[in-house]
Length: 340
Ligand SMILES: [Zn+2]
Image (cartoon, rainbow, N blue to C red; front, side, top):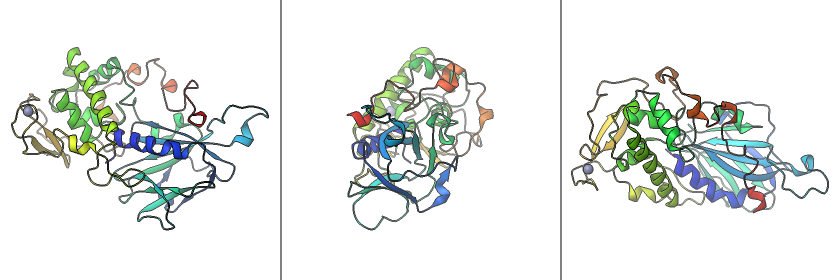
């Protein structure tokens, strides 16, 4: 499943191609993948690609319509006024296609009047979702997600974890707490931090929170530098695979010697998902051998709000104001990709 590094890889791969490109049309081949407000019309002639951003596992493409909202003589690039959000689900990806035929499982395409290729949303398992929104801050796909895992401060991470007694493995993957982490990077980050996946989140002491935050940033940045991980289906816009799966230290390495101690990496199955860890390097008593239904949910599919005791406002927003959360495109001081 694409996680933060894979979505960030897509963003970086597509940005130059997309930004400033004149749109000729957007066509859904599978309308059921669209969620949220059905009223925004699809961008067509007169619209431009106006930058790409990301929050957690959601990619956000901005579209502008220069002739309708720039005063005559104004030189500034038009700000995006419509956004296409894509949540990658299990197997979604954006592909740049030059040939006449779309690849199998193509559900949506964006065509451009001055480009030979088009952007096609490919999703064999169809768990991905697309939303058109006039403001990403109020979009359905981002309505229940916490701060971005790359943008969070150590203090915010500590505040998030202190409010849940769930094990670390479940808390890290809960998109309402922290956006961007799934099964692969949860395992890699906890191994790098030498923390047991079974540790109660609220039991971490400050030095452990700091180690976890440092590992979180380091693992995500290293994975982005490698173009993400390709396990089953993730591919980059040109069809290439990511490279970080070669550098995994525990994920997918059951029985192989641990890079830290040489003992075999363990794998166990919880909630139909594989959990990889080293019981020697990540010491901690397994406290959740009893099945805990709905303990972690899949990318927003199975929310279980009652499992969070209370999320302090500070966990969602440094200013304590949920509406002012730092979302992509919401900061007017950001560089406009069109201007680059
Ligand atoms: Zn070990």
